[in-house]
Image 1 (cartoon, rainbow, N blue to C red):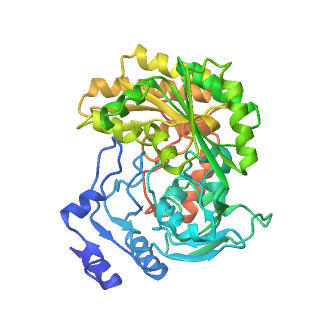
Image 2: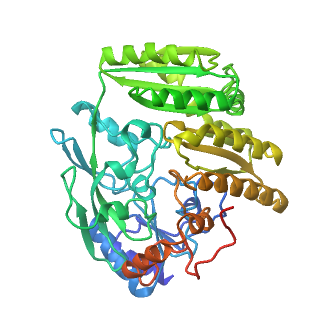
Image 3: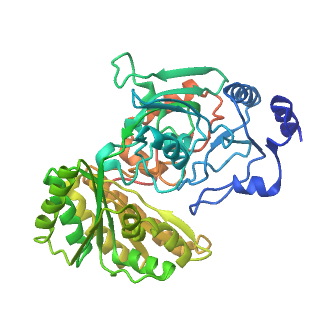
Length: 465
């Protein structure tokens, strides 16, 4: 086929250009419920120069290009709707430079989170964004990922100091740099972070790092209801404690984990917390937490400072996604990720459970409640139209509630395919600016077409109620 032949000519290595069925299938989907679509060819570049030549060729021939990292996308970002080229960055996984005195590292986009932190240990540093999966830094940057550490360290956009990227026409630009702040012109780095592969292709990423804390203590506390756990989380945040992580899971999540791991954790709504810093600071925080939550209907309270036992304490949270998937073989994985102001969190959790139960939908609820971001997770039968209509209605009502309280339809997963109609409701008055930027940098619409918004008039069958 001509596309394979032309890309092989550009790359010059038949092991890095593939039309193998298994490889195409791997690049046709993420880990969610969205219908797969195979690319025509998968290419594994090894340098910025190769990426530039591939993009120039694709632009001249109007061939779609979809960047691909670890494949852990939850909103269909990496599905090549128009076929074309899946640009896999597995081989661009070099840690280019570490500047320990500046707390800065420069990486290629294929570097994974765990790979980076293993390399940083010897410097006493770590990269704090933890989305759960061992995602690539490029993919995390593309979706503005966050995770369990967000309450203390912020989201991906807070960590990215600069970017090198290739635009649709093959030209290369740099944004930002090695300084922690700048007031020079528009913040283009912030624009490209979270752009989901629709504006450019990352080839280098400059990241801010953190020092490994002296002491870390992890806590697990159970509550009689998800509302009580949510209220306790809010009270703890108001206390001004140096919380590193604060996660909530409901009883159904614990039940799934117990079945998956053959464990016997208490099947009650649970808060998982982590405090890190100097030893006196952490010890003082532990004492205050115990005092606060004993007045907030806390049923059980455990804490650990040994690294192995801390990992065991968190197992029910870290195994949640895998447990849910294992409990529902053959079904799609649909994860909502609304975010609300902290004062609205407890009511939002209560509303979500009410709507889920009202429709008789099997769902679990958990999330990063320290920043108001939580998930309702559905195991869906995509072939059952009536079931999917109900799930979509529940999803819509959860998002409508979040937006009505000043929240957002996505705290960390991005828009991709699944939330385009919600973006219209949330930011309809500025979509013309977003689409204008897209048209300017990618006039042929070859970069991940069909994601974030459609190339159609700005109207959608979803309105904020």
